Every structure is written in C-alpha cells, then in structure tokens.
Image (spheres, rainbow, N blue to C red):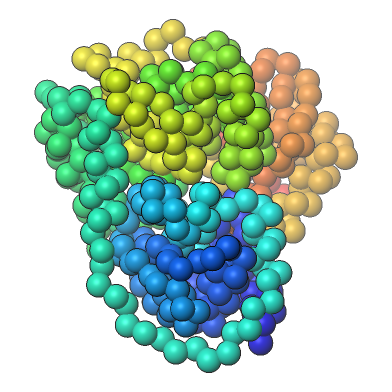
Length: 470
C-alpha cells in the first residue's frame, strides 16, 4: 500500500505543530508511512536525527520511524529523550532533517510526529507534500533502538552557556518543576552552570500533560506554595517536549506566555515581531518594537512571516501565546553570537527575562507595562465539527453569538476571523474562540484590564458554550 493511503486511513492530521492523533492510530505501518513519505519529499537524505519525549508510547513510535529510515538506506542519529528545540538546533547545525516523536502537552493517550527539513521546521506546503506522497510501504521489519547519542543534549546547553554569563543567575534560587518534561535532566544542569542554586521539584514517573496556555489551577496553587516554602526567586518549567516555557515570579505567579516573550524580545533587542492574533495587544501598546505582524495561530504561520521581516530588520523574532519563542535572525548577547533558531524554544525567553530583571524581583517587570492581561482555557472532548459550527455561526451573526455567550453586558465593537473568531468589545475586552489544532478541544482566549476580569470572561464564555452543547 502507498503511504498517502495509509496516512489518510489512519485519521491522523497535521495541526498547529506536527501530525497528532491517538496512540492507537500511530501503528508501525503509519509511522513507516510518515517517515518514508517525509524522506522522499526531501532532497538527498543520507542522515536523519530522531528524538522523543517522555510519554509511554514515544519509544515504540521512534523504533518504527528509525526502522523505516534504515529500510530506505538512511543513517539515523538517535538522541533519546530530548527537548524539541535541542533536536532542531542539532539538526540545523548538521544540516540534516529530523523527526521529533512528541505529543507536546496533549494527554498521554495521544502522540505525534514533528518534522524538520534541512532548512528547519516544515511549512504547510511540506505537510501537504508528506500526506500526498505515494511512497510504497511494503515489508515492515522493526529493528532495536540504537544507543542514545548524548551530543545533542550537550550542544543545546553549550548554545546558552556561550552567550550568557556564568554568573547570570548567581544569588538566585530557581525552582525547576521537572514533572515529565523532556528536558527535566537538562535544565538543572544548565541553570546550575549559570550560577543558580537549583531546587528540583515535582519529578513524575507518570506523564503529566502540562499545557502552558491553560495552566491548571492546581499547578498555579502549587507554584505559590513552592515559592514560599523554598524561598524561590523563580520557578521554571515547560510543557512535555520542552518548547513552551512556564516561568513564575518570586510569589509563584506564572507569567502568561505572550508577556514573558514580549519582555524577552525587549531584553534581546528585537526590532520586529511576528505573533499570532491570539497574543496580547500589550505588544503593540508597549511600543517596544518597530514592527509587529499578526498571523494565524501556529508556528508555521509565524515562520512564514519571517521572510518579509528579515529583509527589512536586523533583529527579528516571533512567539506564540503559549510562550514558545522563535528566533528568526542571529543576534548578539554580551558580544557573543546566538544563532537563529526559528522553532519554538522554552529556554531563550526565560533566560532573557531573567537577564532583563537582573537583581530586581521578577514581579517588578510588570511595572510600566500596558494594563492588558490575557487568560486562556479550553473545553475538552469537543470534536472539531462542533467547534467549527459555533464559530461559523458566530461569523454569520456575531451579535447573536455574544448573546448566546451571555456577554450582552458588553458592546461588540469588531470581530476578526483570521483564525477562529476574535470578538473585540468597546471597552477593549477580547474573547477569542478557535478549535485546537492538536486535540478535540475548543480553546478560549480572553483579554481584559486585570487577570480576574480576563479569567471571569473566559469562564463565563466556556460555561455558556458547555451548557448549550450538553
């Protein structure tokens, strides 16, 4: 059978970050089909890099991908459990393609494959090429996993030790919430090398689906307890594959991803940004940047905007509301060059913000920022057709949707359907609905003048939708 038929019959689709689906759908045959199709859509592939996250199904999927690559005569460099940006950076330096086996933040009964060409993260055009490629998948013979190569682990740490001072974090007590993150062994080593006193927290033998866009209330409360108990200056964590950060201040209060990255971009001297429509309007209101270009949600869209920006500006970056920071152009930090890495990275924005704060408490970085606060959450187990129906009906009659959401106390000023449906009200409050690109979920992003107001808007919106579809 050819790969396109196998992929189509699997029901697995590309979302905002790779191909995602149920673990039961990622059979050996399907992993073979994706791997062979990817290899055959690239030019002259002799070597490929592969790594995994810590979810239970990732090793078996990697074994199938590695076996498929070897069956095509391609050498494999296997890096084991590794953050996605570490794999991307290593593959970029070696000028070889890569496959990351990860479902990021989605539950452990799901997983995914993320692909990198020799030039970097695949485009939407690449996704179409992979799913329509007609490569024959004949005999499937599984080979044992090769020994893990530790060089990617080391080179990713060296990337940041090269540009940041070894005393960057001296006199800082940094909590590392390890859970099941792919970088849980790497982060303590790096932060210690930068001078921090590291306190490791929350190591888990079971996979924990941390979503940096919708941090659970239990995780928020736990961070506050840890900050007080261990007298911490900050708490750092990531999602499952280490490309989206979480950073809490000395009070255990988490930064939202877009505020974190906005401050990081300021710290790094970025001139122009590409960000999705879901990010806070504080980015424009801060006047930190010469140009801000808004895109659809998903790293491929942010990356697509880079080509136009890098021709006009020297320092270009992008980020998403989840905190994943993409560096489009090489920059200099303390006189040392940091190479561009146009894929989501959890480490760079956190280190840049810690550098920006210097000896100040992290909470003081909020001083002087526009009074705009975002919040996000989602309804789980909402199939895409249901989410699409709500949004499409809202596009046809946005005022009726406002009424159905029990938001009639607000006056609708405008709506934007760049990605999902974004409602902006006369008081500048925002409610943005869109189906998740990675899971059967309906996401809601809100913005207001305080966290309490943004959270209340989100809760009311999701509660109203839940009651209508129950």
